[in-house]
Amino acid sequence: MIQHFVPTTLKEALKILDERDCYIMAGGTDLMVQKHRGSGLLPNFDKDVLYVMNIKELDYIKTDAEGNLRIGAMNRYCELMNSSLVPDIFKTVFKEIASPNIRNMATLVGNIANASPAGDSLLPLNLFNARVVLSSVKGNREVLVEDFIQGVRKIDRQKNELITEVIIPNCDLNFYYRKVGSRKAESITKVSLMGGYKIEGGKIKDLRIVFGSISVKVVRNHFIEEKYQGKSVNELRARIDDIINEYDHEIKPITDQRSTMEYRKKVAKNLLRDFLKHVK
Amino acid sequence: MKISFVINNKKVSLDVEPSMRLLDVIRNELHLTGTKEGCGEGECGACTVLINEEPVNSCLYPAINAANKNIMTIEGFRETNEYRVIADAFADRGGSQCGFCTPGMILVTYSLLKKNPHPSEEEIRFALSGNLCRCTGYQAIVDAVKVAAVKGIKL
Image (cartoon, rainbow over all chains, first blue to last red; front, side, top):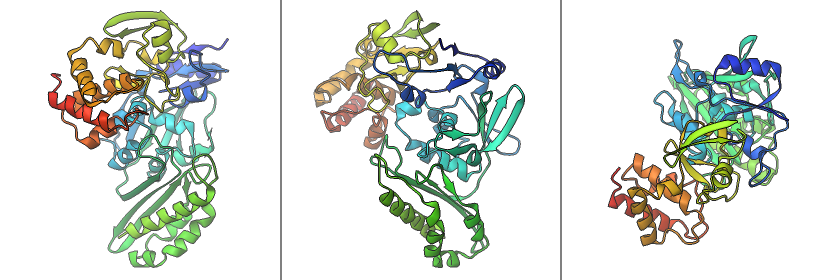
């Protein structure tokens, strides 16, 4: 018999996780689909389940002394979309995730934990160098979202750890975001790209590019980004074809029910070109 | 596990598995069958109910997450004046044909108009974007929401 745990304090939750391997349920919008068996049947859980939505300590959206945004594991997209603390570019992304009903249930931390190659919130999190905080009875550790997600549904979480919050550093850039899907609403991404840049005195001070749905995880190449820092905008624009070629080996999409490898590869490059043309 | 909540203004306490879908609690335990099951995976919105006035898909909502919350299904909403205005507008504009999506459409319309009494067409379509209808082609539903907004729900 599997057991269900509904802790109301973080301490209690961490103690439970220290003693047993559990599925962790927040809003349920991924897990309830993955474990669904049919109408009128209980979801098919093969191990214990720990529910986090009653841990009030994990319910907050705040900025800390260093100006970082901190979001608790309980906080849902609908709350983030209504918060004045959340950067507009995140809200742009959230607006195109699933549907209003789902956004009233789904949490940001849940989207990270689910580690889907098509997870849309992972693009701005990666671009902003956001970190997750993992808590256990032994203490806390912080990991970059970029490193935390290791592959398709593979994350750097130990069985005794709970993702308790996301830390998003302040990031003052100009942004570009395009999600390509089949519809306006409820579409799972075929290809997406987010770019960020800052120009000072005609030179590139900061350049960041992330792709979604074209590999096992969000693609970001720091080496290429750094190569163009300090270059002039004119030089960057003259080298758009070179840059697209440099990313060629990173763009490794698959063919699945949503799209084909060829289409994704073509669109990813087109989005990159479109973004680079926006840099001015 | 004992789970207590308010549904349609009545206090209820049930002994159910925490992972049971709220949809199954509503339809099979409480026998309120106005809430429909369409896709069962959060895409269609036929199972929409309001929790603390926010629309959610009850087919993905674990029962335990509803503990101590306020749930409204179409049966409870039917007793309100706001229901009358919205239902009349749907009837007037042909916003309901087979009727399967209608309970969800009506609850989402209410939640939209409560927050935004004079929505633009774009805002209406955005609010209804998680509720699928295979009959109307949506225009009649959008028109119905506009009519309901004009008639003004005294909220």
